Amino acid sequence: MKKRSVLLAFFLLLILFLSLFALPQPGPNNFKVYISADIEGIGGVVSRMQTSWEGEEYQRFRRFMTQEVNAAIEGALDAGATEVVVSDSHGSGQNILIEELNKEVKLIRDWPRPLIMMEGIDETFDAVFFIGYHAREGSRDATLAHTMSGSRIFDIKLNGISVPEAGFNAAIAGHFGVPVALISGDQTIVAQAKELLGDVEGVVVKEGIGTIAKTIHPEKAQKLIKEGAIRALKRLKDFQPFKLQTPVTMEITFKDEVYASLVGMLPGVKQLDGRTISFTGEDMVEVSKFLSAILFL
Ligand SMILES: [Zn+2]
Image 1 (cartoon, protein in one colour):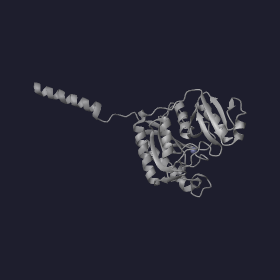
Image 2: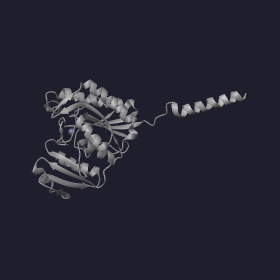
Image 3: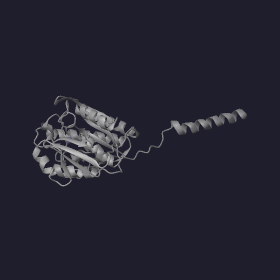
Image 4: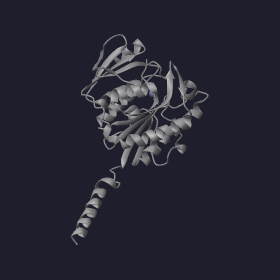
C-alpha cells in the first residue's frame, strides 16, 4: 500500500510538472500588427523602372510588393496576430494591389497623412513590420537610398541623430509604445535599423553593391519574409519601443537652398545654415505633422 501511494504521488507530481512546463501553454497572442510598406527595398527592385508610375516594370513590381506584404501578413497571422493594418507608404500611396492583398487586413492609401508612412498606428498595436524599406540618403552600397523625398531632402536628424525612414517611423511607433519587430530590404537598411533599434529581425532580400543590387528570386524573398515575421512575433519580448526624449528636435537638410530659406521663414523654425532648418515639436506626432506639411505642400 505504502509503495503504491508513493507511486501515485510521484505520478501526480509528474503530471503537475508536465502541465506547468512541458505542455503547450495558452499563448497571449491576439497580436495586433502594423505593417508599413515601401517599394525600393522589395526584392528585385533596382531603379525607377520598377518604382514609378511611368516605369515600364512598375505594374509587375507593385505585384511583387503586394506579395511581400502578403508574406509578412501570413507570417503574422500564423504567429498569432488577429488584426493587421497595412500602410501603402510609397509614391502615390496606391501601389498595393488591393484585390490581391490578404483579405484579413485593412489598408491605408493615399496622402496626405499626419503620420506619413505610419498613419493609423496607435497604442493598441503590439508590433511594427517595415517591408520593402531602403537606406537613408547618402548611404553606400544601398538600393535607391533616400530619406522621405529624393527630390527635396538630403538628411533628417532627430535629436541630433541622422535617421533613415525606418528610424523616423520607429520613433512614431515608439511614441505610442510600439516596438519595431521586423524590417526587410537590402543589407544596408537592415544594418542601419539594427544600429538604431537593436537586434530587430532583419530579412535581406538583396545586396546593394554601389547603386546596383544582387537580388534573390521574388518567391525566395517572400518565403524569407514570412519566416522572419513568424520569428519576430515569437521573440516580441526582445524588442523595445524606440522612444525619443521630448521635446523632439528635427533638423532637415534640404537639397536646395530655396526650401531651407522658405521653411526658415515659418514661426518657430530656425535656419541653421544655407540648407538646414531646425524645428522642435512637443513629441513625434507634432514633428511628423510638420514634416508632412513640408513634403506635401
Ligand atoms: Zn521611401
